[in-house]
Structure formats: C-alpha cells, structure tokens
Image 1: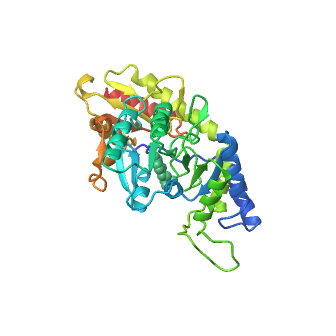
Image 2: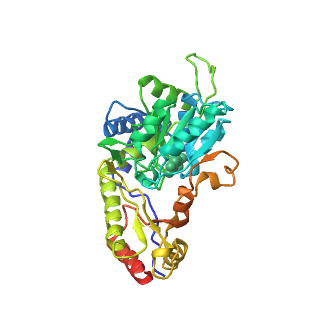
Image 3: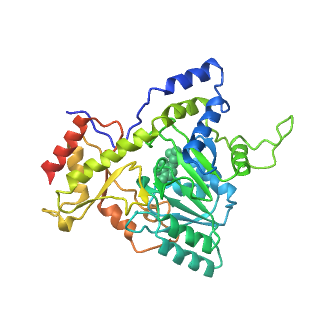
Length: 378
Ligand SMILES: *Cc1c(COP(=O)(O)O)cnc(C)c1O
C-alpha cells in the first residue's frame, strides 16, 4: 500500500528548536516569557494596522474570551455562521447564551449578509437584539467584509471575526483577523502555521488586550495575596508553544504560497473535468491563503452521475485523505434546536463539497498520485 496522503499536516520550518532551547536554557518554561512577547509582537507586525495580540492556548479559548469581552452573558443571543467548525459556536454555549445560525452565500461560502439582516430584524421583533455576530473566513476565504460590516454597523452589533483558518488571507490588501471588533486566530496542528496547539485574540486596543491576558491568567486582582473579583480562566499560551510559533511565523508567507500552489494545481486538473468546480476567490479584492482546497461536484453534470461521496471513497481506496465540507451547525444534533435563517445554501455545499489534500508539505510524487486518481476516476 502506498503511504497515506493527508488533508493538512504541520510543516516544520527548522527554526522552532532554537526558540524552544532558549526557553529551556533561560528557564522560562511557563505561561510567561520572551517567546510569548516575541510571538505576539511578530503577529502584530504581520497583521499591521495597530493591532494588539494576546496569545492563548487555543482558538476556541480565544473565541470564548472574545465573547466574554463583548459582554455575552447567559440568556443573550449570538449570531453565528452555520457552515463552520463547531469551535466557532461552542463558546456561545459556554456562556449560557443562545446561538442563532445563518446560512452561507454561494460566492465565499461564508455568512450571507441578506440572511444576516433578516435574522437581526426578526430577533429584534421578537424582543431580543443579538449581542454579537460570529463570522468566519472558511478555508481561508474572506467573508463579504463590506456587506457584513454594513449590516453590523446599521444595527450596532459587534463582529467577532473567526480567522482561525485565514491567517495570511486578506481583503483589499488588509489582513484577515483585523476586520472584526475583535478577531481570533488558531495555531492548531492542522492550521496554516502551528504552535502544536494555540490561538490568539486580535484586540483593537491595549486595554482590550490587557483584559484578555488578565482573564486568561485566572483574573488575579492587583494584591499580594490571591484576590479575585471576576471569573478567571487558564487560557494563556505557554512560552514553549510560543517558541514553536516564532519559528513558524518566519515561514508563514511561504506556507501561504505553497497552499496557493496546491489550489492552482487543482484548478488546472479540474478545468478539464465536467461537473467539478474549484472553490475560487470571487474577484481580485479577495486573497485567500487557500488553507484547504475544496471542490463542488454536481452529479447531474458529471459523466456517470458521480457524487462527492463516490469520489471521496475512491480517493480513500487510493489512500488519499479527503473530507466533506463542514457540516452546517444547524444540522448538528447538539445545535439543531436553535434558530436558523437562510435558504439551504450551506446544506447544498455540504452535500456536494469536498476538501482535498492541501498541505504545504505535499511532494511532487504526492501530487502525481492525486492527479492520477482524478484522471482514473473521471
Ligand atoms: C480550528 C478552528 C477553530 C478552533 O481553533 P482551535 O485552536 O482548534 O481551538 C475555530 N474556528 C474555526 C473556523 C476553526 O477552523
């Protein structure tokens, strides 16, 4: 059996060990230290636009504290893009709040601004104005920034920008992660860069950042003893993980270029196959890191009424990993009882969409095997 080709794997830069060794030799083996400060600074420089970054131990924790800072409390409603990973929505439940799910639009596969406005109007008419909007840049594709921002501003609801998959993406030259009232990043093992596990809040002010750091380190008041007047969390990134991050950020742009070349690879293969469309930037304002390359298979247009599941199983038989798109949250057993607004665009994407091996680490032999699989099957 040939070796397995994975969807997305971590890709070492070779610079990580030095930062980790520095942490050991200076005995900063804790959730404080020079690697954390250095990693945050590198991210701030990378994102530009006067951002303040707080490194935490996961993207999920970052969303959670983002909601805390946006004052989401038990009984509140929070709007969330339905087509996403469950980690976008779970922190709403951690706060005892109620998620309200919104469909996708067909161009970016992200939150539909029209369904978003319908939902807000309807929730307000029912007596509850949503506290926040969680919008996601799926697979690295920026959501419709201007349209979503216009709706959010019209009703004065803050945006929590889930940029977990979109570090290195941009819209009109501005980096993703910087568009929300608060933004979040993830450095999980399968993301565009990794700290083995980690995340960050992208804050808009020093005060906001300091608040996040305070909450993530058990909310200790300024006193010689342990004194607490707020609920605290143990969410800070460790100085060791931040060392991995410092090594990784040096190759972030290289990883983006490699992921984008995987996208081009699929575009060139699929242009010759009827019934397949590759997920693309709608126009030149959008720049995706193409964290994952994805396709839609329209069975009615393929030669033998092929479904995405037929193709997924075929790839699996060649030991090539692929995966259906995120199953929309409003179809998930844990979330199906909550309100949903839309026209089933996300359902259709889920039905026909497939994510393909996209890692920056894929070799030319891997590409040859993938290409051969496409040609053999279609
Ligand atoms: C990965 C991911 C998260 C969660 O990040 P973790 O670091 O794994 O906790 C949140 N939202 C989206 C869209 C993600 O892809």
